[in-house]
Image (tube, rainbow, N blue to C red; front, side, top):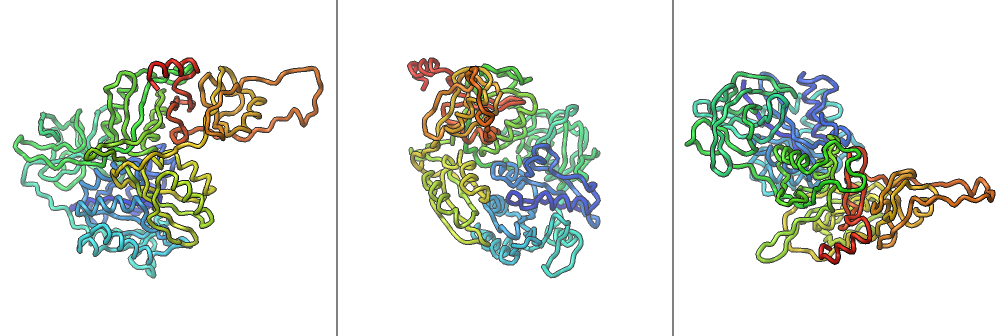
Length: 596
């Protein structure tokens, strides 16, 4: 049986996973309720976070397919997958057209010489414009320097939600078979060279409680067998001996144990306890290692540290620095876009691809029972030719025309430069180039300014000269000066000063941030103070207290709104903002010691 290896790539929410699920159901690999997005966070947020492998059989051919994330923060998942496959299915929304992440993933695949099959999805939308989008995709191929062969791509039209694909818009279709036939025609089978020694390279890692670390990779040459003695070549040239204890291939979304597998297939192996992504698995020391898998550098950093607030240890199961370090070390094994510096004794500096990348890690930690606190995210500044450089991103915004003014004003103050402005189906599309530093903390403000009607997307362009100072916050923090339970009576007066982050009867401590202040300076308050009781009779109208719903803190919102002198406290049950120095006395001492 010949083998074809493909990956499905697209911008977030353009229908990659829905289409993959439709293919798996049509080929009988899964039941109607199964989905590639099996992780709890993926199901809650409706996005793909981790790249996943699956396979299906169609007309006697085996096709390995990798479902990849669409969000820019998880671009490292896409980059490592693209090096192990032969062709890509590029999914584009029939209404939105190519978006920032479409450009990113397509650029990476074209640079690696991968052939693309373009799928115009969601053609059933009222505002769908499939033919116009097809022209936009062709122009994108041209702009990204595609070769003549890559420009001659095949287009398939689809309604992934209904499990329908067609070669021409006017064709009648009831399933995805036209897409599968196109894959067989356009993607050549892998040339399996089994007469040479084994060479395999992992592009993903997994973990099993009984088998330990698992390596998912492509067999480039030779045959791999269960129980085989192998040599692992690291990226620095060193080697070590190992033995494969279990060998699996994929059938549908499940792994199936096998005795051997040939070149061209994607397999999962156990027994290599310290295997890393990009290393070469071979059988002789004189074999040439496969090219290392490289991904783009992180763009932001922040400090992870032990929670030392007055409420520390109340809710968390894992609270010590050693436990946090061990968990972060395990995360490094599978999260290739993450980098961590463990050299400091009081904190661990974590480098990531964006706020969402870090927020997903923190959410996983708190659900596993970890308790910690983190500092404000900061962009990574690099010295290039003696000059300061910072990461820049291309920002694409779709919003109603009447809201263009306020958004352009806000982005202008954050050093954004307008590159393009055009109408798109009753909306206005703005394309900016701006520093990542200006994007941090802006998403919440953007949703307020556009009343939830705007769409904000971005992709990293690289490092460019430092853009200058940016005023990140125009509001202050409301900081409690006493420990206790917040009283509704006092909060009714405080909410006139700004937005509150807590509800009445919430436990607070001195130095905890309970809200924002409209004016740009911090304000110390006493939310515990109750109403002074007297024997004077009051009317019912005067006794009633009406409070607006609090702006409940999530991890993403906390990372956005926190100030440089604040920490985000994360526990399994609570998310709180606090000052680094809880009392005025601590602040003065730190200032005198030169720590501020």
